Image (cartoon, rainbow, N blue to C red; front, side, top):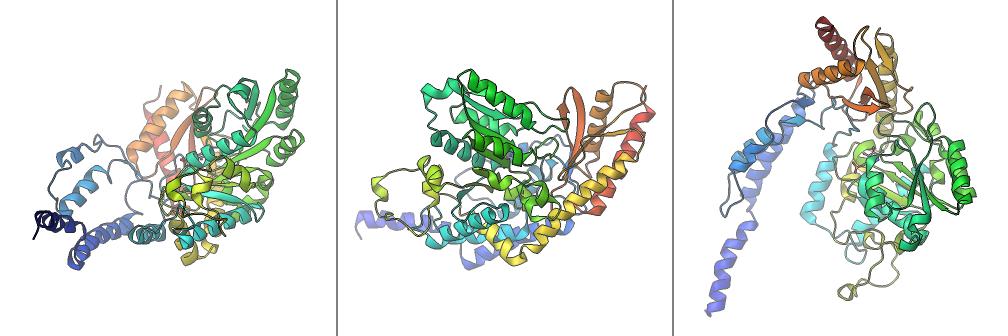
Length: 485
Ligand SMILES: *Cc1c(COP(=O)(O)O)cnc(C)c1O
């Protein structure tokens, strides 16, 4: 054999290790499946939060090296260092931030997507994969009342989805460097911080950011919005973008979408709604009427890894005007000359910053198909009612001061001790809850008040979880009051 062939053969012998045999696949797969089965079987009994000094340092003991490591060792490493410390987002007791859970069938969708590895960036390469993603986008458009022609993108999360929308609005209004200082974006100080981030990344930080006045429930006050637009116009500024939230992160309240849509239309502005948290409540009977006006936006973000309980990694943007989304994201490349012609289905690569991407459609399509929509609707309605129940029950207990009435599935509260500093007390209270760990709540700070909030959106959260939460709150308050001045 020639020398080169010899060398190639040697390399092949080693590189073929990347294709495990049937037996090896079975062994590794069964270990992983055993672990995940054990995880799911115990999920209702393990903590939502393990306050821990372990920050995963154990991983450093097994560095990346030239040699393989046994699967048993890796699973132990994962269990101790990754799957133990701090927040357990798969738990129904995760009632902090905005939870979701992580549907099993979605994991199987990812498994299928990863093994077959179909190309979901271009219709030419993976027509079925792209069509599947577009079918899902059109389904989401339909449930929120967007027209048939709506396009969109399955992005990795709400932050990127919002960025795509803001960049699209920017280019649709031709906001170039020159116009930036004179252009105005209207938003609420209750927007998710990813909006501020997206504005900055999009190079729009030097626009005038007009934080509009809010009503007593922390929603945009449409009168204030109207006045600000008129004022800015009189000063020669150009109002071009309004950003509203369909479900704010702090309080889960919905900005008055209908009235804002009206104002945007009258002033020829782009209307973007961040519905990362709340948009999917449109599937529920109680949520739908509250989200009226959502259908009037130019662009909307909704996060299946929140509202459809998927594992992390899917946030969606939908845009009514295909040309606008395309104009902000088109590309040209000689090496892609085969992927030509006006295609039956738009390609993600033409409508987003990505080219090669994870085939995210399957992680949504598979659970939607296997379960049907019905249990998703029921789950969302259940979460709304659970939040209402929590709110009513806690209100009955002396000492708790409740925040705004929950519009969706976030409620906020604090405990006011008869004496002493309430902020201090609630800081201690949240610490006790975290130390306990059976449920996880998060806190926020509004108008210098330290506030505890509960967000009910994990699919594993049920009545039992809420009763337990109330019981834990009662326990921890009595405990703290024992040593309170
Ligand atoms: C979670 C959230 C985001 C950010 O989405 P990610 O998926 O975490 O990137 C944006 N807006 C709202 C209202 C959210 O709740």
